[in-house]
Length: 275
Length: 307
Image (cartoon, rainbow over all chains, first blue to last red; front, side, top):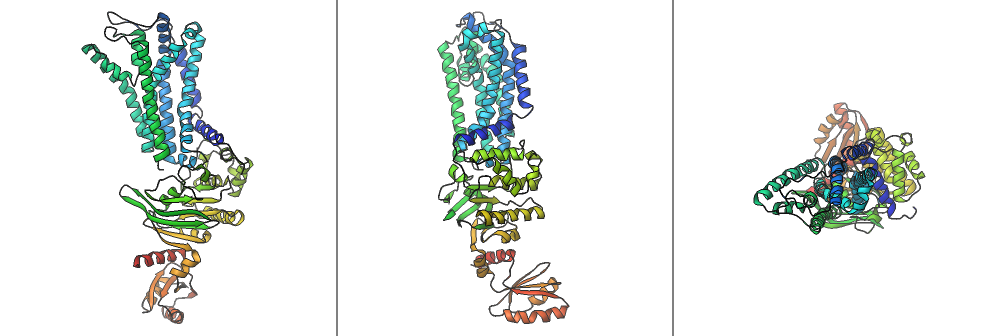
């Protein structure tokens, strides 16, 4: 046997996982849907309308335009991205655990965390790359003069919008590992995803009635797109006009929570997962 | 050198004790069978050996190391599971070439191992298109890619037809003879183990009830066994049962295995033809010390239970 580097088994398992997760026609269909969502729904006017009597938006007009543009192209592709990630984690990783393919991977000279990283890079990383690649390319093609000067706003909007889906993906990962099948985690993922719309709606009503932003601030810690919406086009300006630093703080906190969930998943997979 | 050493190994699933204080030692170059009924603890033992399960108690060392998440050991072991699963949308040869790259061996080895298990004609087939037997052969080819020193196989012939079983056992014998590969084979199909194993560990209720070279175990548990082959075993069994020096007997479609009191073997040799004549049965053969693996298993278990 010849000597080998540590990278090769990892790259081969990653390549095998990508081959399975994105076999024809998944990659093609999802790329098409991302493209469709990006180019059809793109809107470069200010789409945020103030419903409150006094709207104290703290962002500049250019930032608001950039935010509005990103929001317009995010709506459908973000849902498609979530479907793809949910499929890859629940169906891909779940069935690999259930059928014993992970057991087969465990016979290769690669640490458990390497195997999970390869699986997650395929399930999440490639999906994210495809999503962001098409979205940002689309933005650049459609409105380079709006996007390039406001790259920070664009990236922050993506970061804030993706954090909750990533948190759900992390929770689904934990459930999939614990149950060693994906069906239940897929249901939980979908419930959590739709629950956020309901919960944020209730929190908004609660905030308006009580005239205190506490309920929205709490939810912003796991779904910072709420604080971002308030920052760029807040409808609750009377009692909550978050500063930019606040937006960054909530976004940061949300990613700390996401990271914590994934660390839990890694720890469980590496140290405790019995097959 | 010992390839596998397990000491005081224990594993429970909730209240169900799967393995309880199991001790095992496997030497280099041996073909050892893990023999036991369904639910005896064979698969759980194998999973702990492979580092897929953490023992609740005790320890296991493979090549002198803890197998949990140990990449060095994986380069020295080939694994065949009862139900083989691989990423299914890839072609057999392509996937084995991938495995070659994973282990850092030449990609030409992929075709070599396919030929070794007579699967070369399926080299361009998708893995999902393989039959159960072909998939199991593919699993063996997969386990051989990196020329391991030890192959651990859990019920590897369970889903196969007799022809495919026989072919796989031929592969085991060939690898052991030509490449000095050691095997740990778990099975509840005892004739298979008797064909290829030089040692067996009899596992029951999560413990090793007997372990050693096959010859030693026969000497220990099957002494005083006489095998009578006849055309009418059930009628002859009824007659032999009446002999007061017969301690145990078991019949099957081809004959009867009789265990007699010490020093009574010659007496049985005298009585058998008389009894056969009485019931008009034809004696096809009488042999001493030729208990089947099945009988050896039963005798070892009953000897342990008597203790």
